[in-house]
Length: 523
Image 1 (cartoon, rainbow, N blue to C red):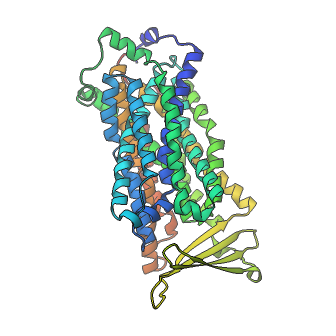
Image 2: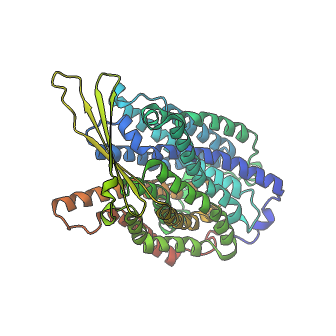
Image 3: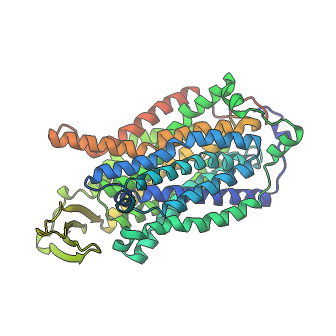
């Protein structure tokens, strides 16, 4: 940035600044809440919207649908980024909020696969794509809006409050899911209660719309508009000029791609791994992640503020490097905490409970729960569900088997610590990223230019992390079943994807990023 930028930066009172941050953060938090409840309920949604018979394929299909919302985010960044640079920040991310909230509410109304067949997954996919497009325009608008109000030299600190909303959105989504599940009970929640978190979002969106309608336009954008200096073609100016295109590519491959995989590994894949690989009971697994997220969230602001003093580069690259070096030992330890093959069972204490339930269609559901007790205090339940169809032969279907492990106190808190460490990495790479991106580009094309690398890095590289990691583990597990011992610790194979992406990004960032903005364009 040029030295005269501070002279053109409008003076804004602290009260106005925190009102801007609050209004932007509330709306962004709600949008992340909308986006996250789909990922958090992936296991249940796979049984609702996809044909049964192959649970792994259904889960992968659900994760692929979830990932589709991330893949289209760069297109949303282009559409809404251009609109934001032409029309204004305020009205653009007001539109994205309405699209996001409406899509989430509609997902809660879609009948299941058993009712409307393949229309169910197709409608969910369509709404996920709309969500992704909307989120592609939301983040750039909120971050740009706050940054253009923030005083010079304090952008890292003030924009870091926007960064907390992604984690808080996940935290709130987990809270609503757990509260609904505990209120309705496991069976009702799995049957129809999962719709409640989706439907509740419409109330939250309504509140956010009222708040955002009261917001004024960004002072820097208003100044450009008054002077007649707005970009006539933000897309051409952002990606058609060599210098700006260079900054876009450097932002993507030197920062946001690595930041994206660190973020989604530490939050989403951690939860998926705990539930699927470790078989931790649903409520306890969500509590583990929720506590870790709540404890680590203040560090977004700490590292954002620190980046104002020592620069963005060192903090972000350190977060990537720590993930690269420690992910495998961290996840190996997570797995060992619930690995029943290494624990001694009190065999005499084992209990077996059978329950027979008549289904609405006349079928009989037999649920057999075998509870195992171990010396370290761990409790594991093997749950087998068999449906006997209403036929002359009364032929039972193939049993559906699941495990539910409840950790003892010591292991429970150790697992929280291991997730907390991963979220600290997330705060290091994500806390400073908004200020870093904002400072790369001039005001006239900022919304467009920063949104694209952010959403490719997070939407594609980061958003695909759960799906690719789960697929890698499934492939390694099958290979190990075919040739025992062919893959050492197949449950860790999914980590190679974030390690590789973060590694490439770390090298490029180390060689080419500068601690301060490399842009010479004036605001």
